Length: 217
Image (cartoon, rainbow, N blue to C red; front, side, top):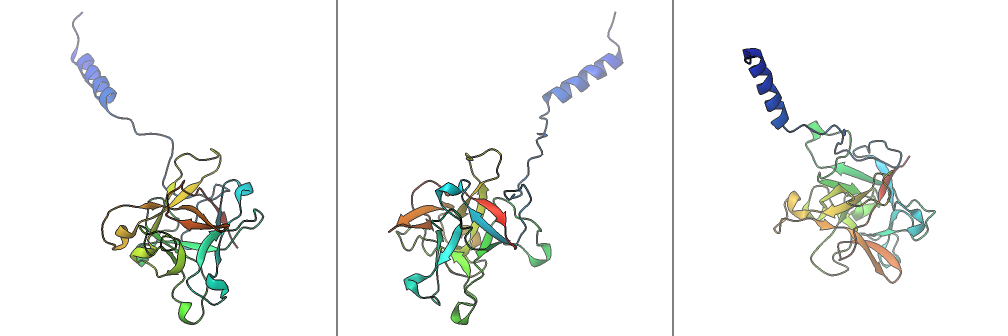
């Protein structure tokens, strides 16, 4: 029996579909999620802390030189696992008219400590790293920055090897070039640097700090 035109057409359609790449159906996206599996809101207060709280508490600020009005302040991990730490606002750097509702990974953002808001410190509440290529204390995370400048430019990325597959965990990167900084074109992983018993957020060598988001009131 000779093949018909319809059989040739059917053969060609099968061949075409067989050679096309099929998009994944996992439903994966680039939104950031909190410990309850809800999307993390842009420019809203959150606690951040380790996946396993037995390894310490949440992230908070401590004042420099024991001066309650001093700025900038260091960004550190609370040693007590029962403490959630401070409330911080993660704000995507984007046009005001196109402000996204939720945070997304691999997007530049500023992190606002929300304090101190008095006197000369009022406009200097964002996290910053003054020199990521230097040694401590210049490569430690402090407050003292302003929104959308190179020293205050960060991004959130998925943690490559999560501690728990049931929890969305992330790591932070400092990316000064993406906010107008000079080369090199790179991002620096943020980790924990211990100095005299205090665990600072820093870009010194070490394993990236794995953290989760928890909604604050």
